[in-house]
Figure 1: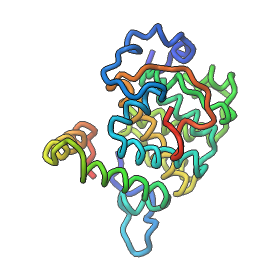
Figure 2: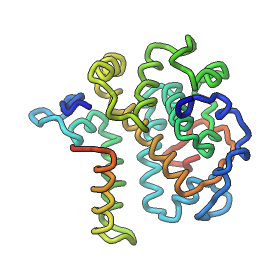
Figure 3: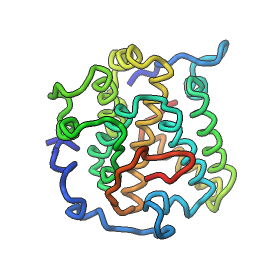
Figure 4: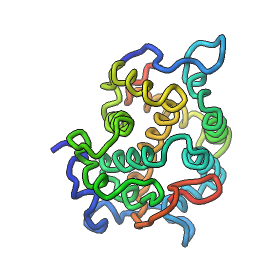
Length: 187
Length: 65
């Protein structure tokens, strides 16, 4: 089984992950753990909120596309802290969540979602294997503007998982309207 | 992996590059510039450490750009 292919990873109790509870840095109490740790450098945290939050604040892509890609990248990293966050307003249904680990074999995803998920599948560990043909198909769906937004978004999803895993932020299940905003915390 | 630009330049007269591709999303480009500028211009890490880790990360990810 390849990385992130076990659908049970998405649904398993977060406390089952042996890496889930290591916490090297403590941020301010009451804030979401990832945001609180970033808050140890408040200037960087605020600018990161403004950057990451633009994906949702300015609705650069459909929220469902962002949510599917965010969760797929988190599955690939087996990042319980990122998987614990759900965007309830994104319009991703439970059947899609159940099928996400094997999206290539599922008919639950639209053509645009499949193009986006292919990029999400390859960027974390196989970025050199994205072909010109695959990228051309992506641009056909999203255009240059959408392709740039999606690529930045997936890069940030990937970076966030790496940050969360290395910094050891605790997973805290939360349902939110947007995982980040310039005017609020990063969940 | 292709080394040909895959996204056009958003700035007329300029070649495709990281900056001119990102310019297709001016809000993202501006926010990224502010964040990255803060990282490089301030903080507790010295400039040499940041540059060494930047170059090592580029090597690990095999990013010739």
